[in-house]
Image (cartoon, rainbow, N blue to C red; front, side, top):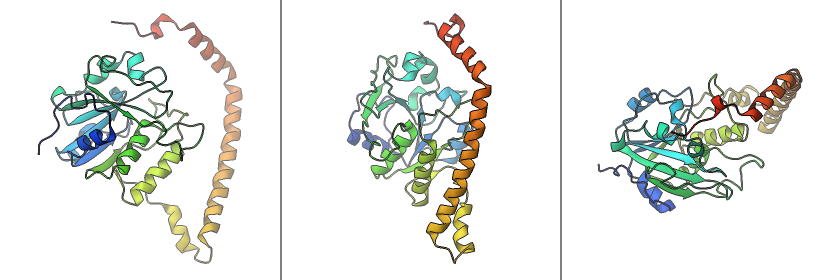
Amino acid sequence: MDFPASGTTENLTTAEQWCALFSRYSHVILVANSDQVNVKELQAEYPRTALFVFFNKVYKILDEQFSGHSLLISRAQPGGANIVYRQEVADVVKLFAPQDFLGIMNIRLAASERLNTSSDYLGTPTGHLDLTGFCADFYPQAKVPTSGFAIALWLVDQALPAKIILAGFSAKRSEKWRVVAVHDWTFEQVFLRLFERVGKLTMNGGIATNSYASLASRFPELPAAEISSTIAEVLSSRLNQTDAQVDKLISLTNVLRSIDEFLRRLKPKFLKKTKA
């Protein structure tokens, strides 16, 4: 099988062009920046014909150069991609073996997000995919989709011959990396798990058996709606209890947060990233 050459993403802009690229691979594996991902084990699990798609700050999961077929997705922001304005492009790109690195897919999901050029990415071959409004009709208001969620849905919608695999899409916090509150992680997990259950994509490692589903057989005399409303009632009660405890923690940490905000305003030199 002939694979696209390195740098193939250069100047790609249409859905048709991107679909043609992805269709050349047997698997398209979206790799989240998660502590739960072991890239070496993941790569060994799939054939050489797979394309591994990474996101933004890949140094979170890569500690050496990745040698498989690879693509980097860089999300646009109002001020441009974060790896651009944080001057991290060189640190990120060096983690991909040049001979199998297709380049960067710079995406945006809102009109306020500004796409970047290849020169912004230090000459790295760059293509663009404008998905403005793609999730607007169903995603919770006041929240924005993660790049991984949006691309997973977009790939499913294209009905590609390649198998879509999600690795590390757990939405779990870790000791090292935070879960950004601007995204609705619960909604995304529900959506992706439903896609898994109807066979639209595969979550690497599978998903846990839904213990709640067995309640219907345990209580056959109750309609499904009654069981669902009871589950919702319990979850609501537990969330309200959690909110009360969070409020207490917020009150207890007021002083610490004030100090943190004061230090951030000072922007001490050792926290700034200097230009080379």
